[in-house]
Amino acid sequence: MTEDKKIHPSKDIRIKKSDLAKLKAELPKKTVIGGTDEDGITPVMEKAAPEICVPLSAESVWAFKEYAKLLRKWNEVMNLTNITDDNGIAMRHFIDSLTLVPFIEKEQEKKGKKELTIIDVGTGAGFPGIPVKVQMSDLKLTLLDSLQKRIGFLDEVIKTIGLNDTRTIHSRAEDAGHSKAHRERYDIATARAVAALPVLCEYCLPFVKTGGIFLAMKGHIDEEIEESKNAIAKLGGSVEKVDKFVLPGTDMDRAVVVIRKLRPTPLSYPRQAGKPSKDPIK
Image (cartoon, rainbow, N blue to C red; front, side, top):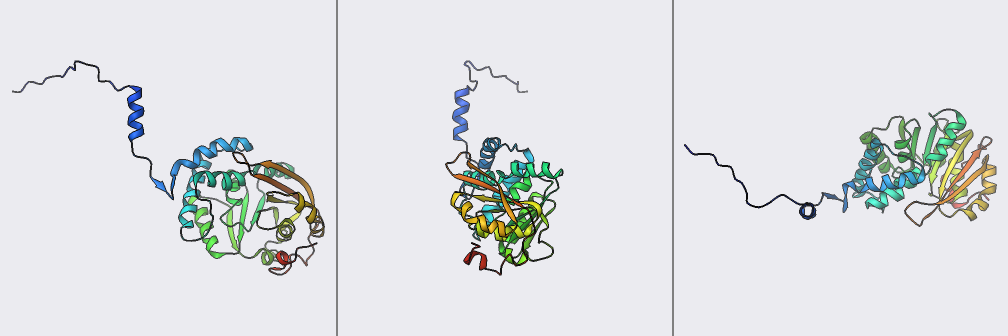
């Protein structure tokens, strides 16, 4: 019978902290998708969100990570964005969109309810609408875009991250703005720099109920505000506030223009497709 023998080493072979650090450095890196680390979204979001007074839950962070994965995947076969790195997606798409949250929270307080209706006009890849909805689940969100392929992407995002009370509409803003189902049906309309402010106002204000607001997301805004005064008045609105800031973690100037709808938009607006951009209201 073979006798079991215990081994008693003559020297200390315990692993030191310095050895652990070396071993960790030599381990294979995490799988990279689209040239970026899958977990690159989380640290950027967790650092930047508090700077804009938007605390994120673990569920929200998960949703943003899934959203980023889908954005990269679909971007390989169609043009959704030229920003595909984790830092760029997190900062210039997600955090930028979330800068609207404090303005919407104030509107919720003003209206005395959280279940406000909001339409994102010309949403593209879902910005700012989807990030705002991820953070503010009580909102009833409509995403409007004129390209059917983008609608397909948006529907996939909505399904994957489980967004309730969220729908997509394939239409031009000029057409949907005359539809009884959408004209003056929303508490809030928003759009992110898809056109000059006079044009944006003609696209968006027809969707807003009297007493509601249009939140325009822009970069440099001073000249556009002056150029938009007549258009805003003709469309039934008034500039209530202009908030200028620098996007956290960048040197990019941003502005949110709050336009209050004071009276119904004349039925002649929006004009036929293509007219607002070719001939903005003077």
